[in-house]
Amino acid sequence: MDLADGMRPDKRFRCDACGNLTRFDLEVVERARRFWHAELSGEGRVEGEELVSQEVIDAVCHWCGTGEAVRVVDAPGAVEATQPE
Ligand SMILES: [Zn+2]
Image 1 (cartoon, helix red, strand yellow):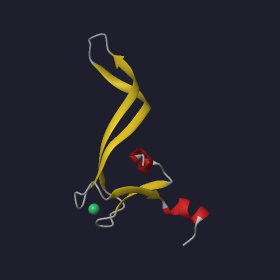
Image 2 (cartoon, protein in one colour):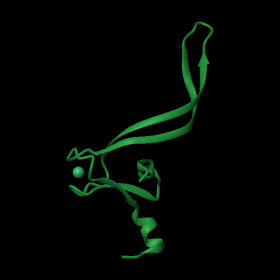
Image 3 (tube, rainbow, N blue to C red):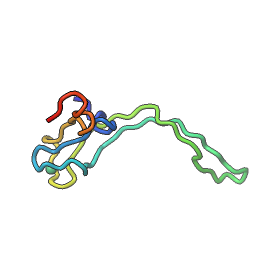
Image 4 (spheres, helix red, strand yellow):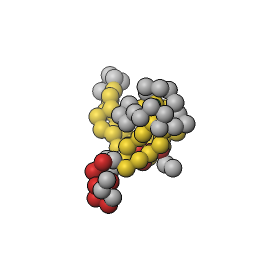
C-alpha cells in the first residue's frame, strides 16, 4: 500500500480502530522546486513552488493515535462508479 494514495481526490485514509475518515497526522518527505526572489539587500522570499515528489512515510490517526490501523480506501465518489453499495 502506498500511503501517498490517501491524499489523492479519489482516495482517502481510514482508521479501522476508531472509524476516523478525516483527521490524520502525516509524516511526509517532499522534494520541491522553488522560485527564490531576493532583494539586492539580501532579504528574500519564495514566490513560486512546484512539488517534484511526495512520499508519505507514516500516517497516524489524529483521534486515537493509532498508526497500524490506518489504511487507504476509495473515496465515496470513486466507489459509486464501479461498485455501488
Ligand atoms: Zn483512530
